[in-house]
Length: 112
Length: 113
Image 1 (tube, helix red, strand yellow):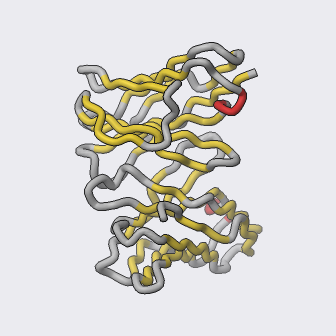
Image 2 (cartoon, each protein chain N blue to C red):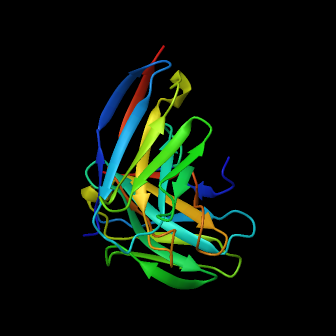
Image 3 (cartoon, rainbow over the protein chains, first blue to last red):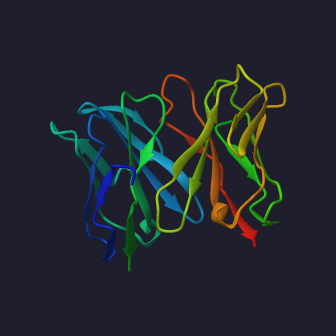
């Protein structure tokens, strides 16, 4: 158990809808990362937050957004969903944004 | 230039054998190279990591070999066990943000009893 908690584990929704994925980092970790894992694109970095502020951005679509709250949990919002957004979305955390990343078990999103 | 290329895509090894997975990168700004192990239904977990100031790092049965001039690094799993059957990802990052990882495409390893 990495100590990173993600909910929901599975989510099925329709095209055009909006969903929110939630992540609670390990106790004490200030940095949260979001990654997308799909068969064709592999594991891709989406976005990082550090102590409530956006720190780095990767291949994140404009339809996607994220935030980190004062209690350090984070949410990834996916809107206007398309079939191609079906993937595993992982949250990871680290103490200060350097060193080992601890991944959660992921949220599997299926868009029908 | 941001890619990390990993091979092979899949690997079958007999129990007790050596598993070797290779990765290559292009961006010379990368200076943190971790390997992650992922079991089905789980998130990736850090296995071992290396920085370019050393050419080899060993932790138990797992060894990373690093060739800075060739911009290549590899994972060797000695005495491979069925419990090692998983997907392995190499990755690379710059030291300023080691969590912003560029992952290879992954290698699915099957260790036969």
